[in-house]
Length: 73
Length: 182
Image (tube, rainbow over all chains, first blue to last red; front, side):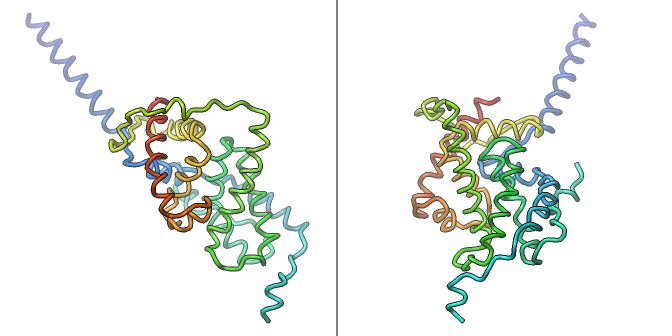
């Protein structure tokens, strides 16, 4: 009986520790938007986009002024 | 994860104008995130973000200032992704997840929970993929706190009141589907 009680105490402690761990790692978001904002902040823009864009822009002529800007002057 | 790398995206070197480079640095994160969640694949999002900013550069002087530069870039990104998705949908059959949602009594007032933050991206993507295009776009735009309801309404071609009304149903649909992805 003594061993059984001790075993149950240990089991109880293990369950409490596991629940505590779950509480520590659980994440809650009040709304989908809040979750999406968190996800967006964690998302890193691949640096190769900037390099690709820079290369593409070297082949682009500077765009002319639009007709309405010329007309306004 | 290195937080310093998340602060700001690197600006492209040797860009044609300081203004454009600054716009890329300021807005590339939200444009990349929108394309990522609309298209569902990092490689497609990378291509799309490149194409969106290239289009923006070509149209840079057409910007008339009747919206924010942020909203203007969103407009280009939404149109670009819409074109891509139309051609993709013509080759794939997508199940209508709206029917699965039906009139489910979702506890929309209870928080969305998950145990592992590393699974967040995958579950969000699965959930968004199951939503209608309208709800998906609405939630992604409203999640950007820099955009007003009026700007979201302009980008989705409806009134601000309609946005508010649909947002409630979009949240409910998201919550139901998100719970199914567990």
